[in-house]
Amino acid sequence: MMQVTIPSGRVHDGYCGNLITIELDWICPKCGGPRGEIFPTHSFDGSRRLVCDGWRNDCGHIDTYAAARQEFLERRRDKK
Image 1 (cartoon, rainbow, N blue to C red):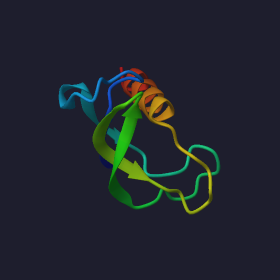
Image 2: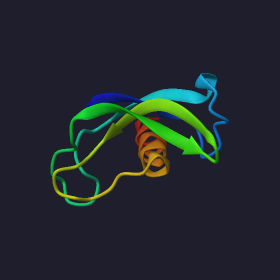
Image 3: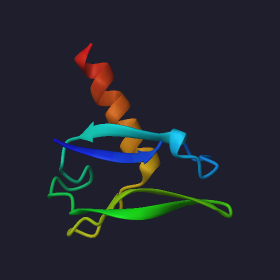
């Protein structure tokens, strides 16, 4: 498990209050390989940008913030 700070939604207006910190299994959801190293990056919302975490999976599969949020919500729902 790793914690990442990502935009809370597709529209974030560049406002840091629209960031969430979530915990994810640190495996690629497509192939099960490891997710990549976390690095600071920007999420762009039109002309607005927000500094958040990013990562590149060595396997080449791309994680989106939307998919990461969904993965987090599903895991949380499964624990209930």
